[in-house]
Image (cartoon, rainbow, N blue to C red; front, side):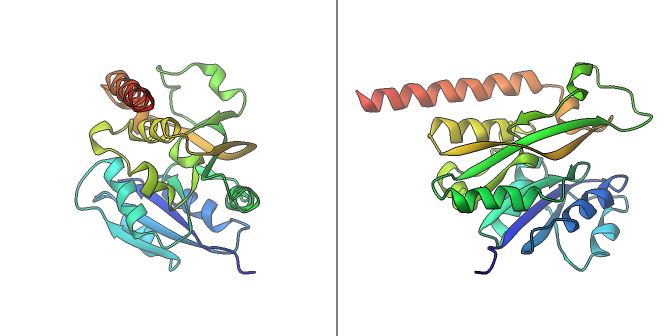
Length: 231
């Protein structure tokens, strides 16, 4: 039986400093069937040159802006039965795809999986003031795009990411999936190493708390509407 194709969507904007390491962590995967789709948010540094140096990469320039639109473009252009995501500054373990796809193949009722993540601080960068140092001590189970591997069909059920909620668009997507009761699993393995540095989008968003509050409000409204339908 041939291994089903996985689409790896990498979004990037001006990421030349770390981008090559992220790509190499995908190329090191022990899973045999995957494509790499890079969505570039109109980088002005050497990002495009790095992407184009790899014949394995399909390179697409994003015509609009925002992480949600970048993810959505990648999902639309993905050819795989499964879709996974990696930011330009993070690293996968070599077994990321094989572990998660293996689990979904063994559990056909599960629509998506996430995994544990270990944070690390990029040398010579200050520790982010919005985080606690203990975050570096152990791996954590996280529902974020970089730990996610999903069946492509789940995006038709849950919908795409909401550009109005960037950079909390992933929080909203996972909340929508939860509210819909989409079957998922959290794997025990640490499959992502997430880099902390001074350009992390989610850590530097000025209205991050307000966006999370909006996500929670929307979730509450959905649950109320569902309860009304069941009366």
